[in-house]
Amino acid sequence: MVAVRTRLMGLGFLALAPWASGQPLLLGRWEEVEHLWASELVRAALEAQAEAPSDQALSDLAQGLVLLAGNLRPHPDLQAQLETLATQVRQLAQEGPQGLRPLLPQAFQLLEQIQQVLVPQLDPPLVAGLLVQMALGEDGVAASYRGGFLGKRAAYRRGFFLLWRLQVLAEDLKPHLSPAAWSQVSEALAALWAVYPSSELPVHFRDPDEVREATLDLAYALEAGLGMDLLPRDPQQGLAHLRHLLEQVCPSPLNGGHEGAAWASSRLFFLSYLLPLLGPRVPGTAEALAQALREEDCPRLFPLLDEAGKGPWE
Image (cartoon, rainbow, N blue to C red; front, side):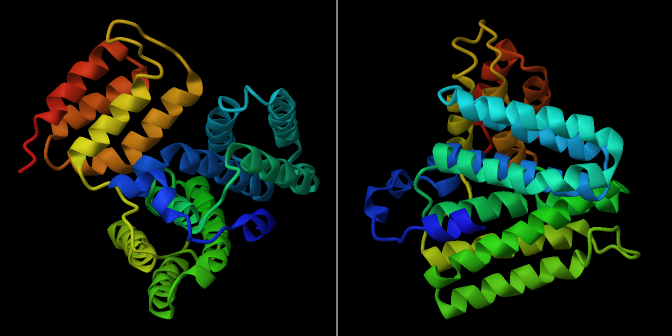
């Protein structure tokens, strides 16, 4: 990815970064990670749609576009180009994969421009956070493999293209890691490539939990290599962050706001990092939160956040 290689900055300014106050990077810089993830999801959806058109790829494309378009309002020219791209893809979906492929270079160039506008400074910790999101987050490499395990061919294909990009981005990060840390990252990536030999469903599947463990190994190796926390681990911190995201669309518990990008961001964070923390301890509340987020039900969400905050967290 040319933009990453030319924009990747050093580690000398870590003391000025917002996550230095004790927040994991995926909390302190969630907005930036979310922007980058949305671009990568759109790219993977386009690759998948060009190879084998599917409703899933179009759905992934729409999901990524919602996250991007909602943050491009200060940049109407880019927003208009993105809307034109979405229209072209939907039209070309009727023509089969060969119709879309010539459009990919132009689409990828537009995504690079959008990334540079939404995330002007791309530094090693931020790239590491993006790698974790691509590997471990909702609709990422591990979740896509689980989808393939359940027979969802298009989900598996999405995971393959995300992994391909993840490898490229990891190579860009290599100069900022020690040899020992890079060795651990490489081992995790090798484990993931072993279960993604191609974009087609394999004959034999591994246990999806093993694939998730490999993505966790990748996250831990990146944390050790950069000397910082990337993953949220404290449920209370995660709940506070979700409340902050929801306050952008729910000015009060009785006022239901409807901003597509903010809702999509809230759901993405919850499903990626908070649900795995809440589910084992407060499964009923976790499921109720997931449903309320799907339904964009502000009056229910804030009492549920309060209920979840009571734990037990000992």
